[in-house]
Image 1 (cartoon, rainbow, N blue to C red):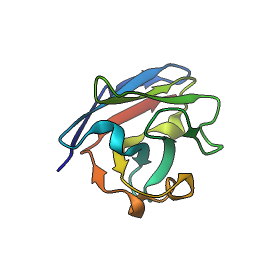
Image 2: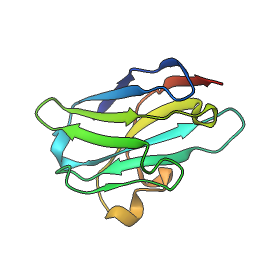
Image 3: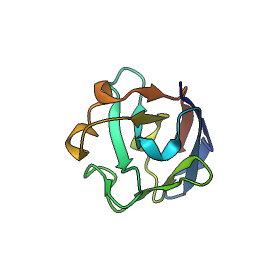
Length: 126
C-alpha cells in the first residue's frame, strides 16, 4: 500500500508562488508515475501535471503550462509542484496521485490513478 501526504499549500496573492510537496511511503516510489490534480468547490477534479517514473517526461494542460513545474526526487520519495504566476482561478484543493500502469495518455484521467493523497488547500487572492 502507498501513502501520499501533501504539504506546502496556503494563501498567496495573485502573481505569487507556492511549492507543493508530496511525500510517498510504502511501495517503491520509482515504480509509479505521479500526477497532481486540483478540485475547486462545485467543480470536477482537474488534471494539473504529471511526471514519469524516471522524471524525464512531464505533461501539463494548457491552463498551467509555463507557470507550473512538476519534478520528483526518487531518493527522497517526493514529488513537487512549483507554481508561479498564480491566479485566483488556481484556487483549489491540490492532490497528488500515483499511477502504476499506462503511458502518458492515461495521466490526465483521475480514474486511472491508484493512489491519492488527502490534498492541500491553495488559495490565491486577487
